[in-house]
Length: 443
View 1 (tube, rainbow, N blue to C red):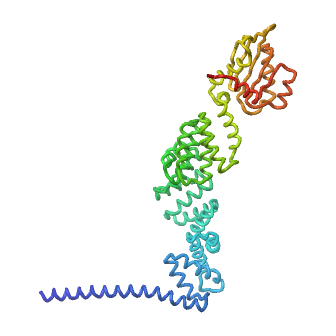
View 2 (spheres, helix red, strand yellow):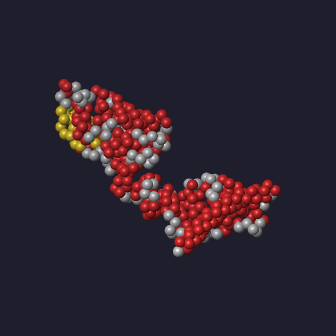
View 3 (cartoon, rainbow, N blue to C red):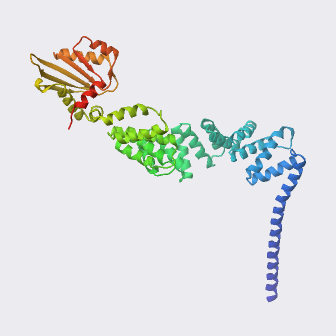
């Protein structure tokens, strides 16, 4: 019995030793085989650069090893000589040339090989997928979409397509169509912040702002997509007439580092707009000056600077143009009283407030007479036209006022000026209004 056990142990040990020895030999052969392939191929190619017996095995070796920089010139050569060599597969060498070029980020060279392969076989998955990737990387998103859609039909289980297809649709502004692909891609790549931002932006563009806002708020601190998320959140809050919340969004955005200049310029512009909406003129001006130092003619920055610098120097003009209705009416009362001396005993008879203007009727005593004066105040900084002046003249006549004074923070059209000539109407434009406002004490 003991002899039998000893025999079994010896056999087992021998088998184990044989296996180890065989494995080592196989490993040695494999390494030797690779070196031999390279040596033989280089020898043949040194004698003839177009030798297919050298090109094919060497290209195959490097391609399978993903040594794209070494495989690329070999397949570039094979593609150029394929028409004269029947042993070369024109579809395969063109496809591999395109893939190698794409992996090396040689986009235009990739189009050459992928285009030839596509013309040979339009139904191949790899051709459609990699051609889509090349179009995507070349920012030709509309061309990338059909390639990815066809690839998805050919390989519905291939997970790498959803991210490209979703982002290609998003970047070509097909927002609603992009959403289902982006959602699937997020399921596959839950940590991908670009996908998350793109989904939120696509939702926002598709009328799902409330849902998008939750994602934008979540992304605000992100170093890569935080600034753009803050900008989107701020624009949404401005749209909802919530400038205070928008200012918070933009102030977070301004703290981010390494933000592209065009994005930062837009953030500063929107921040200034929100500040002006809340009468924070100094902060708004600071933001506009930052823009002017980098992008002097951005949008209407020069005109905004001129306007709000003037407002910042004249508090009464701020009230006239930007305050609440009650503060505006209070200022108008002070203005009309400022226009008369005390001995004239000016007395306000009536105040009418409309969305377009404020009207104040005055009784004024002179040495030998007593007159009714009617004032109309427009808050617009634009041009007041003839129809508005005609309407005011009709009101002066209807109320039997002796004189009408029409005041605007802008100017009057030539037609309006001509109409007022010879009629008991005075037209006060911006410059005249500012002179009056400088004399008014609102304290």
